[in-house]
Length: 330
Ligand code: ASP
Image (cartoon, rainbow, N blue to C red; front, side, top):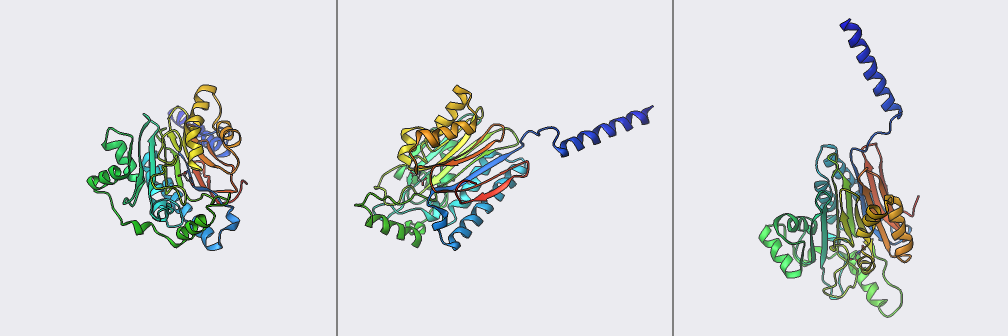
């Protein structure tokens, strides 16, 4: 009798497993992660070398994030790790490759948010911090504030013992060339295409969402200008009941329209899907050529949308998705 029962039990397990493998039952998403490396330029206009470098950096960053999430790590850790990696890559406008402001200097912005309790931290206009995303996280965990700016943020960095660098650490020939072009075009209507801000949103195995964004801002920006990336609700937002969002584009427009929060609010108040909420802000709220959004909802659904020629992006999840792309929408 016992043998029969064990036999039936084994057969039942095998059938259930086979059903899973054949996809009878939609499996809940264990984890999901999405990354952007900035919206703007048509990737076809980039050199082959730049395209390969960006694609490789995005793939490596995605692998790092997946490793954290697969191992049961938190979405916050995945977001910070991914963004730190991209901040160290010179081809993105964040950390090492930050754009020049109009004075020929660099001021960096970053923010991070925890979807569990909407805890968040941000830094704006920092000038000496190698990895602004980690300083933003320290603002969240070590102070009672949300946003520290300029000298105060740099002083906090020193107190926290994070890695400091001289301004010329951030000066790359690529960005100097962009500043020169932007200066020449100053009196014409043409603006330099924004590109290279980085961001990440993730869902972990514990059901927690997190998002973060890091940038050097806009080329040739006024000294002291702060964009949307360090503004919670504009460039970054995360709430376990809705979604995690990171934005890229013309920061002033994202601030005016509280884009990241608006996506979450549409889901909370209107019961909109993540896809519809993002499509609304990209197609209706924002003017054409102003930027893009990456987001993940609490079920692990990933959305990447933009109204520019291209957006560098990458996504992976526990069901085997792993994609990297720079181009226009597939
Ligand atoms: N949103 C950033 C800013 O306005 C720039 C970008 O995403 O390219 O500072």
